[in-house]
Length: 594
Image 1 (tube, helix red, strand yellow):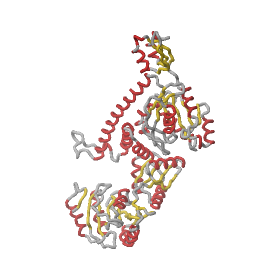
Image 2: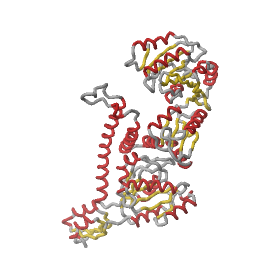
Image 3: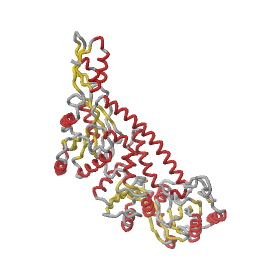
Image 4: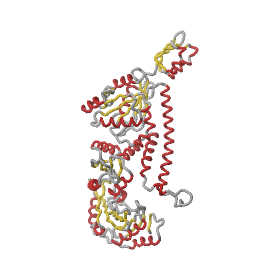
């Protein structure tokens, strides 16, 4: 019985595929010419993958039809430290026989004897590729052979190979490695690739090696040159990599072309950053923002022919089979984007109300900005520790970690400045070079805190040799937000382990800026930073003395609620209060002013 996607398949073709069950495959051969001809013929008619599973005795146990990229796998009993005793032969309708990421995943997870892909294009058999389980440093991986001719595939001595693999699998130390092992590819600079490596590390991806190709013009089909693609393919096979990460944003067609060649998953820098954000997002707002950015990024990269597939309208010439899968996917994404945008708008309004409340109380707003992993969260925690109001409950610290994008959720806390003014200190999400535009757009409601701030503290990692480039990246994002006109204090953090040359360069280049050396971790110059903040934040409050008669004591309560009371005395004529008040209260209580 033929299983899988048999919709629309003629009975005569199903009967021909059914005959495969009667074929006897010699146990010392991977496949036969007769089998290849039948499955290739069916593939050329249907443009779908055909898969055949064969046991060690040469008996066909499963025949299945898939779509253009996937095929149904037989149910296999996986034995401990042994191969399953089943090999899978299947076709690739695009003519490229290289094993895909799905093929290799099925090979290792099902412990197949081997998996063979036969490339078929317009009825012509191109070649074949064979995949075997293999062991790398006690980890279960894979080994690929080919592409090779069908004749060489038939004559391949795979029984001896199986014997070696099974002896290796019996080792007690063998561990099944399902981790992601990546090759990083860039066309920019070594520095950018090093940062990509840190991003991959933040996403729990093991970086095996990096490949840099200096290239002025991007290849529209493969992003990099075809020769470099072949070089990376050889490196991938040698190291057993199962992921290729590119350092720049790529078109959907480039990703698909490279996946067909490499046979493993290919992602770009934007996808990696979005993945990190998705993993780290904790608050409801951050999760909405990340999902929205992911959907907007994915939308134009859905494979398909666009408007030509639309057959859902009414009238002459538009009758058809209804929505295709591509259209359904796009419609679902559009609906989800609409829902998330509405939710984000609610969050934005709520944040606006909180901001207005702080503005009405004339509370100065200070925002920490800077490159990711510059030390913003550590500085925020230390400032809240040394300058927190005494009469509020201690709130938990935000996460401090030596990794990129450790903090995604925005937090605002009150601190007391040296002149006794209360200020709102906000820790924002870190910036990075090549930050996806969709991510900046999605996080606009969070980053609005930067736009409405009275003062920005730009935290710089003075121990990083690329600090100047990181400053440029931060200024680029601030420019995109329209927040470059704010007063800024440039804080050279980690000064205890600073690169002296970098510190000199920064101070020379930005000699007209307010610059301060600190170490948030070791409490160096935090008192100077607080004083500098105090000097630069405009004081919008007026210090006024009032005498409130005892028959109008409700006004005393009002002043306690809506201003900062510095002194209070109970005298014969009434209550004397010295308070810092905003302009509204100043005008309202002129009659009680001393």
